[in-house]
Amino acid sequence: MPLPPITSASVGEPTRFRPLPELDQALAALPPAGADVGRVHLLVARGLAGLRSCPPRVHLTPKSGIPGDAWGRKKRTSQHGQLAVMQRDVAELIANGQPLTLFGDNLIVELDLSAANLPVGTTLRIGTATLVVTPKPHDGCSKFQARFGADALRFVARKATRARNLRGVYLCVTRSGDVAVGDAVRVLRRPQPPRP
Image: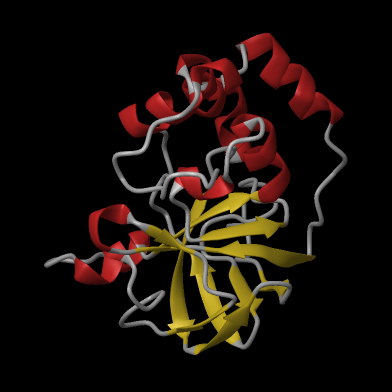
């Protein structure tokens, strides 16, 4: 029996919700993610009513982000929230067998998204597109809680681990290009820390 389509109104399966201690244990067991080079695991566009589609390839532009995505249909769009991105292994441990499209993030990547590794202003090359990490925080919300549970929301929101960006980061496109599943994600440059 096929799974129902995932939209903005979709909720999670409570039997899949993991308690906080289990999430912490699973996080501690993850191998280190790549710091400078990773891969695109999944591309997601949110169509009308948030209906998810997973194109194998997209053409990213500063004006539209991912073609057909909800971000481009907003009347007032901020570049800071153009593309939501999540780290694959963290997404998988939170989803606990549920589809990764349930998150609603546009890119699921294999790369360390922590603030220490990707500070705001870091420039990335994904496929042939160039993108920058924006200052907008990527926080959990009531939809996140409905999909993954209250403990998952606490897990991504705690001050003690907030800098790990477990919920992910936002990117904006600075140079158009093609991105496909399996393409490399490369850190081109990180901002220089201020001088003391």
